[in-house]
Image (cartoon, rainbow, N blue to C red; front, side):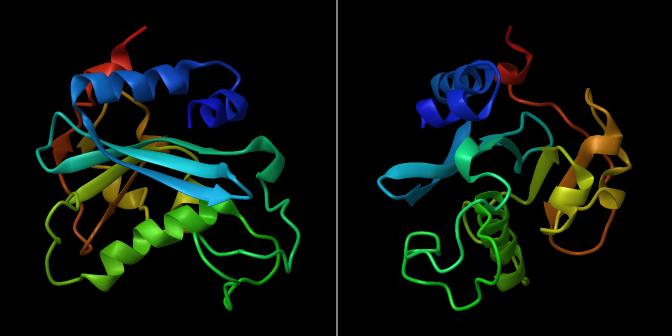
Length: 175
């Protein structure tokens, strides 16, 4: 996983972030997508300091040679951890597939949050990319954040617009 993070980003900052989140006990979940004996994709959910029960999606990484749907159509094992995906049409995109699986958790369990699943997931990123996978820019606009709200999106059930102050894990402010 560390090799993937170092390859996917220009510096080792994301690899250091993951190490610090683990050391601080703030890491909730780490998801890895295997491909051809390597980790093809990865994302982490870490515990927000506030609001309670919220998580932050970061970092998210895909092997550089497989970014942007560069895997060939019809390749074997085009599904996360399994055989050919019947719904796979066109180029296979690791990041999109990982976010689709995350989004499905919030759509499959609409009545209540399953044990261990964060009430809300916050991401700082490209609204057009994350917006395609259930994250909402509009629903995040009443939040107070140390980061720009024009890049802050949330994934949560319902259609409310929560008001809260986002306090990220200490690792996000570490040098």
